[in-house]
Length: 367
Image 1: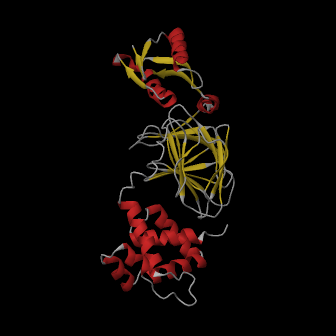
Image 2: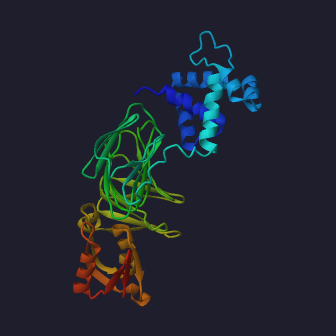
Image 3: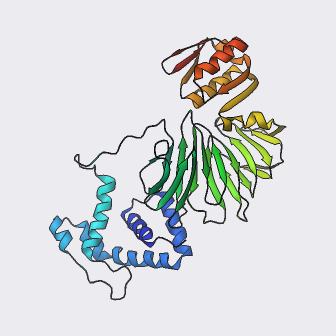
């Protein structure tokens, strides 16, 4: 897709105004290296703005009328020949937008419901995927959002990152630009480029997800907090809920876990557990149990109560409190169903395992 030169021009303005984000600056630098037209926009915009005359004009206090009436002679054959009034307005507008509060009579954005699934697209207001269903147009992005599943396309190629936030009690499926499908579990954040333009396909995960990576000559890399997973085409589950523990389970294909001081290859049917300062542990896993969360179920066998207490807040958005900490090592077998009220799962645990509980507001108390 053709580079959006208007976007490049705006990013150059943000760069000169000193308000550009790190992600946008990285995208700008990469694009002007690879696209001659983008470089020309960058060069000519800076030639107009980044001059002593313009800087001196903007630095001196002037009335609004003077700013709007001032002009400079445009370049005769320049692609981005601007009047000084336009230059001033654009730069001043950027500064006002970022550093001054909006007028009180300006419409206030509707608060985002934190219980809903959120999509942050670069340069746009958040999209509420729980409310906006079907075909949704967000400026240069076209979304298809139905049945807890999302795919999107950009009108122009951009490596800028979007962010999908799935709150407690929800799960979602996302199809990326290359055809990779990701099932995102509750209480998880996923950052991804709207278009894969680099030599590698990089995404950033915090939480839990199951990935079916589309085959491609470009390596697919999942960046975690202190590690990364490199694949070419495979299906695997990754869990980073515990910041001190990474679990990766490979269903098929091949992946390599890259850590600061180690690198481990994983084979299908095996999972790897990584703990700080310890050698990665490799073991087999039961696929039906591990991936049951995609159906809204969590199967567990002989699981410590302390682990179940960590699951309840993620799956139901409620606080879990253990009234009697001595029971944290008690073990339980059963199933939690996210698609039904939490009380039904708790009653099942009570009937089959003797677990006792009571609920006060949004807090679950385990006796």
